[in-house]
Length: 151
Image (cartoon, rainbow, N blue to C red):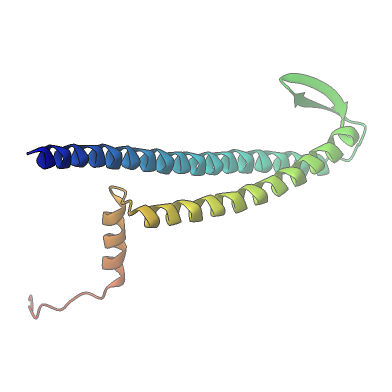
């Protein structure tokens, strides 16, 4: 009887430990997914900002007078400057944004690989991903002939 109680106690401890480990794994997985989403969101924001910079740079190239007044929004304050003053800083900012996007893309790829490895290591299956994989496989398969002729 005492062995039975000890065994029962051991099983309870092992079950509690397994649950805690699963919760820790799930928390780590969710943290990795959140980091991946943050990278993707920041890349999207920077691409929009880069596009805005390029539009303004193209518009300023059409201006023939480098002393013409233009306005630049800096930190929520509208500042009056000349085209000659604004254009170099815009081009510099645009190139820095492009470099940052490239760096963040590499970080996003690394985070994605880390997430996939983590999923495979711990056998994590995300609800809904299986159905997407099956749909992709069905699209790749050739239709099976059922031998029915419809007139």
